[in-house]
Image (tube, rainbow, N blue to C red; front, top):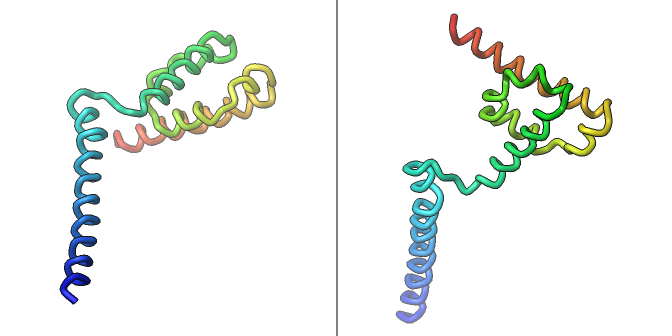
Length: 120
């Protein structure tokens, strides 16, 4: 009987120690570098976003949006839009380009309307 109780206590202890270890490892790997060094493990996404923005900057139809490049590079909803966009279609097909620009306009408009309401 004691073997069963000690086995169950040992099993529960191993699970709890595993969970605590996982939380500590997550803290050191994910949170601390980002907090103190500004380093994120999502830099690949950031690099991809920057590469796509550079490609868009070379296009003539994107010139009016260059004023908003800081907002485009920092706003999460616009970053998701750029990551989800099929850049080959946007660059080659005008209807996809118009659809992308309309979505970008909508998200930039949301940004500007939020600023106006927060200043009042």
